[in-house]
Image 1 (cartoon, rainbow, N blue to C red):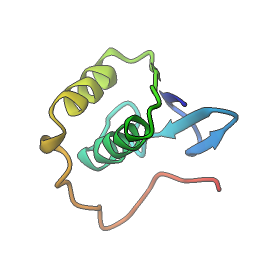
Image 2: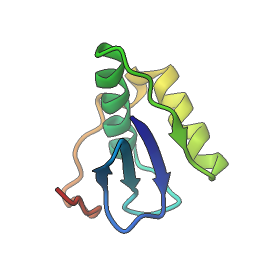
Image 3: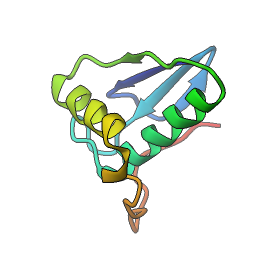
Image 4: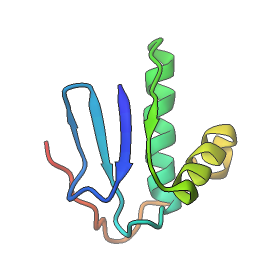
Length: 88
């Protein structure tokens, strides 16, 4: 599954793409990084690669750092208010 991180209106998985919306684009929170790390760990544990599509170098740097050092974000606490939208 490809992961597309951009200024989407909401997060949705559709036809092999995971459109990942950030609550404060282009800023990515530790909570959002934690969610992404969990997605990548799940996909990897099932033998799947997950290419990332993202045009923002700052976001890509944060994501790559979190993937290389997941312990830095896996303890991130859920925010009091979830502001990004999800479409099921």
